[in-house]
Image (cartoon, rainbow, N blue to C red; front, side):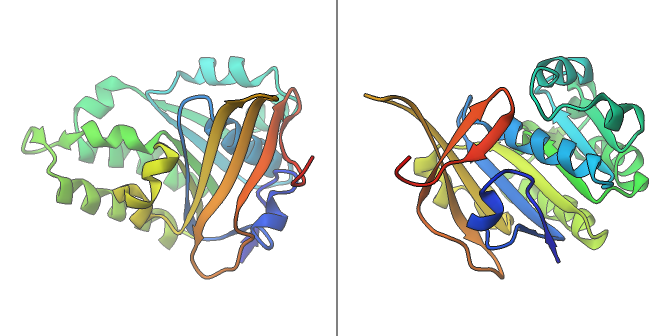
Length: 231
């Protein structure tokens, strides 16, 4: 099943949109547009009848997420008041308690509401969690097992899961987060002689073709949209 990204021009690059259910990793450095692309997808999907959820992991409170997004053209108060889009913030108190506490919060507050599309921003914060019951930091293999179990919960419920990751484009192919995602979008932001340039590259997309290469995009007051190459 295909789901639109609701980003102008991106569905063409993805040869029809995201595959659902699946896990999509949106990777890049700070300011590359990761959160923007996720919230634009959620607001537009919610406005068209999809029940969606956004989970902030230390990236901002619910009120902060709303206030910073309100200035963008895709923002819609109605989808928030109607409950079609729920915004959650998992703070340090829950994260400090470890894996079971995080899993329990997501299950009780997100999964049990039967959404069709969910964003976790940013997934890489889980690198600092520990074991709830043993009260110690996770080893690498334990983190991977926990994350795979979490991703599987979304997949088994037929949910399109989008996760952001603070990952440099140069290291994306060797990141352990990349192995666990079905689709990887790498966002790049750099300064050139002509000014600020932004590019999106599809690194992989299991079970589907896509258009390879670095595709230019713009973030303006209306949101994100892809440009045709050469423009």
